[in-house]
Image (cartoon, rainbow, N blue to C red; front, side, top):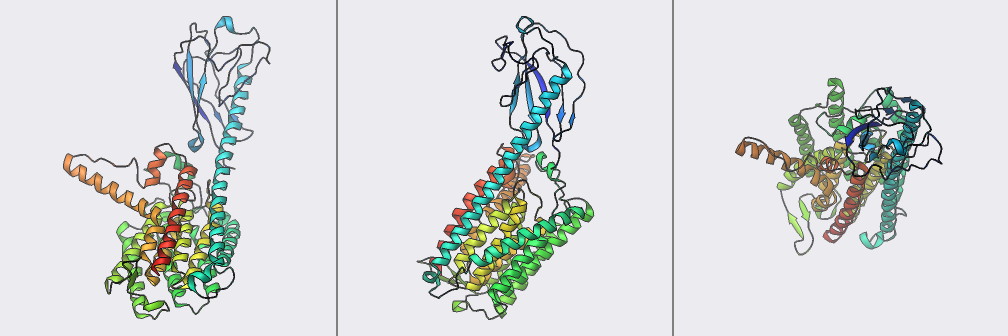
Length: 499
């Protein structure tokens, strides 16, 4: 367990009453009794001077307490505000009120013993708060997995009504569970290996300060969960499926672009990696190649649905012709960067991607059932990765994983024409990418007009804005999961009625 610290700062303030309501003055209690109440502590025979006092509590049995000296007897009433900070895990303030001379009992307490006990209690409290946050991450992840399994079981149960064909039992649930189990097991081998190789996440200096605590977390987790998801899909769907072959190939191609970006970031020891335009150029090249491959390949979808865009009634099928190829390239670039921008909080991109894959799997089921297996397998890979990426994360997916997930989602839409359901199911990615675009455009426009730039959000992407507003990381992720769940169900419904 990594070490953590409490920094306690005492500041002078005034209170209208000589005795703080948080401190009892009964002398029947134990002489050096220290009580923490949310968290508030009191001391019997020692009063703090008005200067700044700082002490830290480290791991379970180690405490580093600076020596305190120059203790004075200060008459009159005074109070101190004690602010506790432990990076992400602090959200409380401690109020300390000293006693008057005539209100103090006659017993004496050794200063070192009193503050050692206080530090011990504060360290235990910090660990409890941190464990509570970790348990919250586990609870959120369990809720997500339960929702996905129940949804897939329901779809498998009534699949014959959707596709009018007798599908195998557990048609979508089986690849989902296989991928999830294999990825979760592979993580216990690959995560320590990435840590030993010192493939650590490079934290942006302009990001939120609390993210500096994640600087030693391994990255490039996409190296083990993306190939497993693709391989399981190929085995379950069969090697004869043209659509699954194309989707798997473009997914691995986008993973290779992300891997190159991650390697350059590690070599340069900063977060620059590939330049923005260089990354976009490679994504456009892969998207264009896939567009021409799709145009020249015979796929098994109804109506040769390579240039047709199915929309809900009364619009119906829309023939885009050559514009379909341009839309495909744009979709690959936008989805890859959208997932990449969303990958900023523990479990955010992986959980949202799993929900988007399930929504797309249901949407494409009537058009190409093999491609639905591919989506379910990739969703299972994301869920297996979440077991290691939930708060607090043991590994990050890196650009290797985020670009691959975006490419896989775009491939499912390009092979079936389900771009509109993709837009709905990937709503979180769309909002994150849009927040960055709005922030940059507004800043440059205001700087051009008024000479100084203004911002719409405190920080972009959008999840950083919520962080700086004081919302805790697991709460932001849980809210994104709820929104993504509703969007996935809507995308599945829209896709079914469009097909």
